[in-house]
Length: 26
Image (cartoon, rainbow, N blue to C red; front, side, top):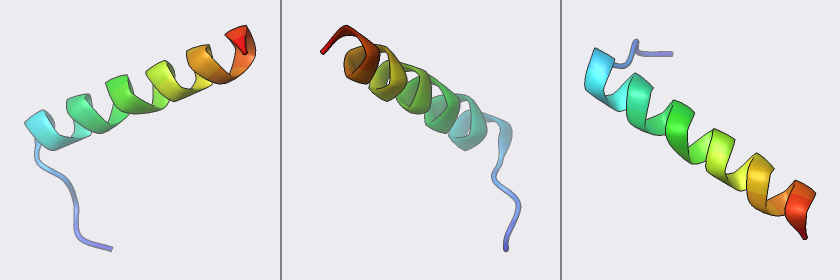
C-alpha cells in the first residue's frame, strides 16, 4: 500500500474521527 503524504494522512484521520463521532452520537 502506498504511503500517504502528511496532508492526506491528517485529512484521513480527521474524517475517521468525524465518522466515529457521528456513529457514537447517533
